[in-house]
Length: 77
Image 1 (cartoon, rainbow, N blue to C red):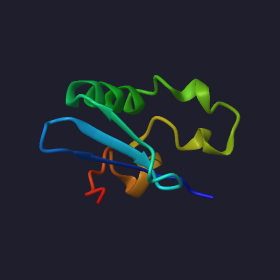
Image 2 (image 1 turned 30 degrees about the vertical axis):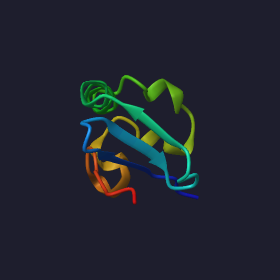
Image 3 (image 1 turned 60 degrees about the vertical axis):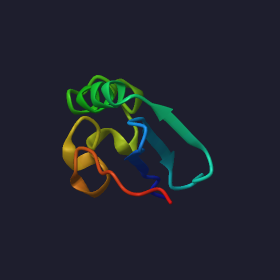
Image 4 (image 1 turned 90 degrees about the horizontal axis):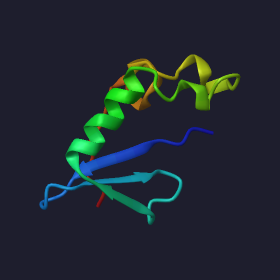
């Protein structure tokens, strides 16, 4: 099963994030915090969370993210 994150920037400048499995649950953060998170993922800062799992080979690399892109923004409506 593949769960993806969807993120978009609202008219208010905030970043809205949800999982494809639970689209009604939306997390909201600032653009600066989202950018820091994406940079951390790409730098491998969170790899230890998936160490030893099937996802371990994908962690920390742009190819390991949905669609092979570092961050994909889509309209959540």
